[in-house]
Image (cartoon, rainbow over all chains, first blue to last red; front, side, top):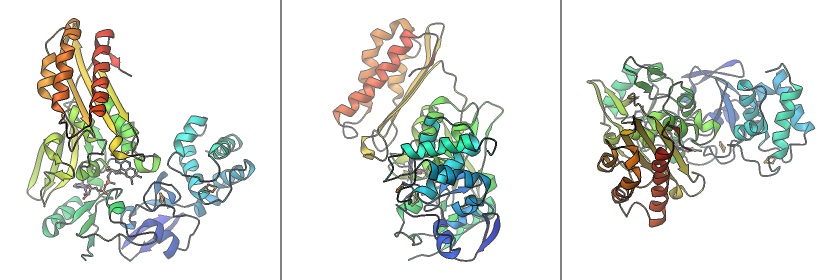
Length: 155
Length: 287
Ligand SMILES: Cc1cc2nc3c(=O)[nH]c(=O)nc-3n(C[C@H](O)[C@H](O)[C@H](O)COP(=O)(O)OP(=O)(O)OC[C@H]3O[C@@H](n4cnc5c(N)ncnc54)[C@H](O)[C@@H]3O)c2cc1C
Ligand code: FES
Ligand code: FES
């Protein structure tokens, strides 16, 4: 049995430890904010935080996160930091089809947790593993910079 | 299809499972989970038993030992390696450029060596620095050079009952150091080339000189004979010795390993490093 924390609540998983973390999150726990794009760690759509650090949940087996704290977009959304990020993405017009956005927000959160005043280059680096097919990235970079300004003191 | 997966709670338990079942360690999973993936929403299926070692504290952490060497335990990630104070420059560069942010929090050094892919980024600087790998089994421990551990593409000297415990980088003094990687993984992997080099110049004499080339063939290339050409000679002899060094280096790379234009690129990188030593005798990072 694998025990870990998801969005602050403890979870016990009894199935195959090789089950991908994303499948546990989406199918077993019903949290569908985390998206699956490539399934190979290349697109970032499935990004979550593990102990505060960004990881792609499609290449991690649930057996690897025993004892860890996982945060998904659902857990982040209801915090002041999460609300600030989501509002900034909306205000900057950074959301088109929306598919990449949960992963982008998680990548932005991972950045702001270690660097609350990033510059443009820092942001581009932080989201370099997240693919967006719609926006051309500039609006997303603007959104993250906006969040860091508006959320002064939050991170 | 074998469908066995173990999640050991301690290193001892892992070593005993390894001995009894031959289960392959899964550390970060960034090679294994992708290689054996079945499709979106489906659990990967492995043709061998697997043990998930990701949570074993005994395999975590990096420290500087009394003799100045750095011990990097197997589960250390590229992010941890890149940010460790005192990590030699070529290792830090290689680690900090692997994949993107999430991959650098997932991949492990044990997995990079265990996978032994010619595309892997860490073996090259480790071999430059004469790093060793520490292997553990129920019967004890052995240590060998990374260069000897990696036998070829995807082949290692890991025994059926062993796991990689750590990598140890001896203290290496250098005055000049260089790291360069060309081409990205996402583009054609075959187009990737990398070179690291270092030299120690004391009172105008080249006391140490090394170079290592990655993704040039099935193994990282070093040429001790070529390195010896320069050692013990004055920096002022660089211009006259350079042709022999470059020629020796060229011969060390098998023609099968690299088409001519790629050899030429590697040679140019090395030439740049050597001429920079002659030009900047005070030393530093050669860009
Ligand atoms: C999106 C993406 C980008 C990548 N980019 C890069 C890159 O830029 N550079 C690069 O070098 N690689 C890259 N890789 C490949 C991979 O991330 C690395 O090879 C990584 O270091 C593997 O480590 P892991 O712990 O995740 O491996 P795992 O998949 O857990 O294991 C890989 C192999 O090593 C063995 N192994 C693992 N740990 C041990 C141990 N302690 N003892 C014995 N055997 C062990 C396993 O049994 C397996 O055979 C990338 C992969 C992905 C998915
Ligand atoms: S779905 Fe996980 S990185 Fe693309
Ligand atoms: S908004 Fe459509 S993929 Fe990014």
